[in-house]
Length: 311
Ligand code: RIB
Image (cartoon, rainbow, N blue to C red; front, side, top):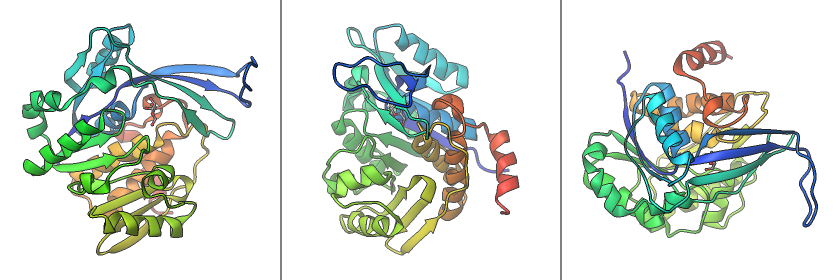
């Protein structure tokens, strides 16, 4: 039986307010959207949920707001079996929220208001150190303060814990500040923002990955949507194709990739195999509406994997 990974996510929790629409209003205009969905989201929380549904033991370190969404978010973690003992409400701040717009092709546009996520500070990482030290992988994103991300990377290195960063939403950073990571996992647009190089296809991704590796990062995975993923290290690069999907909503697919990849790797799979399975897990998440609620549990995933891995 595969080892059960222990994954700690230091990151965001939002509530997603998703509108499905075939057009977008111009300034000053009011138009009708088609349908609406509300659900628990946030890149950190989504990645934690994906890892849990894939079979990891998961610990969340996060801050939520002093509003209706705060306790509901904590309850959602608990309902899913995620350890939320380090998820606290911050007095006087709103929870993180994300108005999201999805077009008929399943493509999304997301606005994040960080709210209480911005109150997660290095001192909170210290306060959670017992939980973090018990993990075999720490997962980070960019919806919390950068100082907390950098601090946690150092904490992981010092304690010899595998560390994976999803630099989302993309923002310019000093690559050297994250060079202690084990895995740097941007999508195309995040890779573009960080390196200043266009990433429109696999060849562009290879050039971009070379730049990130030359900046000191050890392993890079650039997720490329329908084009799969590029896995790159100083020992070479491998393009891992995606699986065909009938997508209705791609929101959270990157998070599904991260949470499942951390789990598959933690179970002891080789990197390339872990990426191949994570490509499928992420693809499957685009066939349902919303983020966390579109993620497959392990039994459903294994059935799909058994059917598709041969093809
Ligand atoms: O990656 C998708 C997520 O981005 C959404 O759940 C939203 O909350 C934003 O954080």
